[in-house]
Amino acid sequence: MNKLRRYTVAFISVLLGIAASVAVAALELRDRPPPAHFPHGRQVQNPEETQMIFGWCVVFYATTYCSGQLIYKLLGSSEESEVVAQVAGWHLPVLHLGGGLFLLVPLIRDLHGGHNCRLVAVLYAFIGSVLILFALARLLGKWRSSRRSSDDGQSQGPPSTDRFR
Image (cartoon, one colour):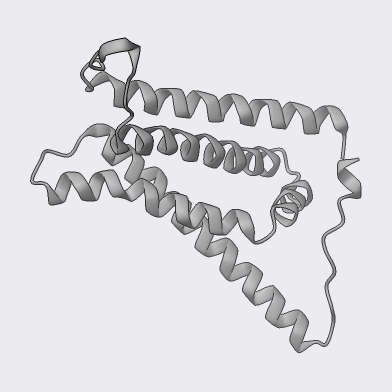
């Protein structure tokens, strides 16, 4: 794998992740009132703000990871895309599944509360749904390949990371 291409893909992926999370943050902050001022300069962060910041982080890592794989596939480097997926192991699809479910919460909260659906809640739900589908497809693929290798009596070791050096 060409180092320059690897660094370029990583850089572009991170820029896309930053752009996506900043866009979601701008949409979310557009409808929020300014923070209240507390005596002595102390501000208390409420759970909704914590959820909002965590949502931005989920959008960042999901966009960065998925766009990196997509860029490799668009460049015709499916092998490099597969190496990224192998290095990610089982933890990233599980993280995508959890993050996707987390991103569905704002829309469910809006619908359950009888409020109009905010644009950012719909955007979160769309990104969350894509993450869930991506994670389930990845986990199903990993499960199938592990079953095939155990049925064949072959043991697959950890993926080779020599291409990343």
